[in-house]
Length: 223
Image 1 (cartoon, one colour):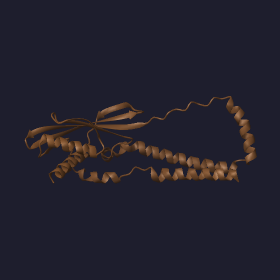
Image 2 (cartoon, rainbow, N blue to C red; image 1 turned 90 degrees about the vertical axis):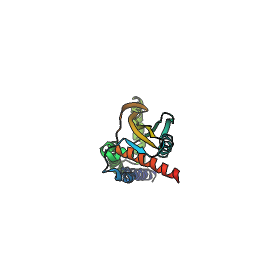
Image 3 (cartoon, helix red, strand yellow; image 1 turned 120 degrees about the vertical axis):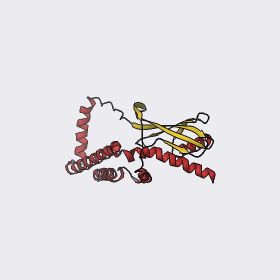
Image 4 (cartoon, rainbow, N blue to C red; image 1 turned 30 degrees about the vertical axis):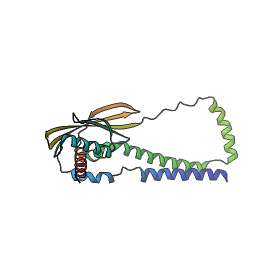
């Protein structure tokens, strides 16, 4: 009876893994809907706001913090701000503009699904063909002697890939009541914390979402 319970529990766990891999690992698109309004707009990395440079810096700082960025530096006198965000997957703005770059998540989901299927099939086969408990114990005693003569392989640490986006905002005073804001973004791909690649990141969805968030912050301050 104990043997049957062990096998039943293993099959239940395997089925749960399979169901999770099929249903729960697909990339979500709900966070991309707010970006649809930027679809017809051309690429832009600068915008003009009807406020002073100091007010624009304050609004931009709050905007970045609300979006989850960590502020590295903020110099109101020079109008230069530097912030970054790190994620285990590409940010929604990149997913919106380049869906093919989310291949890592899709590939992982497909691999997990495949492994889940193999696990279920293997356990069912074991359930059908496994010998009784006493026979299993005799077999384990025999195999343990053979295994002792072979050292266990050294486990390897799987690579962990993360993405870091560094946002550089530069404000320029055009007049006492008008200022310009320019965005420069760098994307870094890290493997186990080490930078594997670094490149300029030009994404209109990120730029426009920052512009709009700053304007909302300015409007909130006026109220």
